[in-house]
Length: 267
View 1 (cartoon, helix red, strand yellow):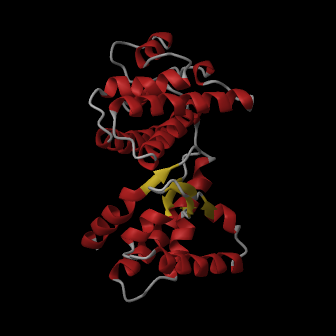
View 2: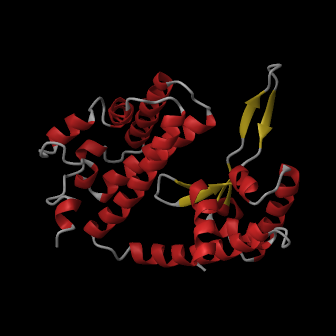
């Protein structure tokens, strides 16, 4: 069992993404490769079967198989749409159920997504009953994982000065404030982690920034440090503008919790 668990974590956990609501999802194009389908048309037929199963279960197909296709420009300047889907755990499970049973990886995927789907059902049910501090721990864990993935994408894009890179995102989201500026405003001690001193909603806003920046770097195939910094700033700024447009609370306006998560961990 340990061998299978390690294998599934490597195969499926590594391509897992987190959206603005803290929900995990998978890209159909990335899942295609992991499930060892060399041709998109064959994998898309599996997706179509999974959609039918989803519909027969009276589950909203659009929520489970969100269309996130994009236009691609070829060398001659022509444009074509590349189909892709943002898949929920349940969608991935249905795809695995309708995949080629002769593939060992399909059997592993069936087990993995069945277990993970059940875990998510329990997690969503339990999350609403958590205290604010418990929600903070949960969201902080997601931001920690998100930053780990973002740092890998940034390094592959040529980033060497990670302080400047992360400050670019903070500046966009916090109207020009760097991490040090945020720490000073929160009256934190020297080198105290600002993310450990945010409420759950402020952490969610930062998680959205982290996740979208990773996607932007990968989707646009960014390979220059300056471009990566600009991308991070633009994502943060766009999220800020969306918050303003929707009448939400800006991140700097959230109250700083009385105790940091590091302090709470001592109890």
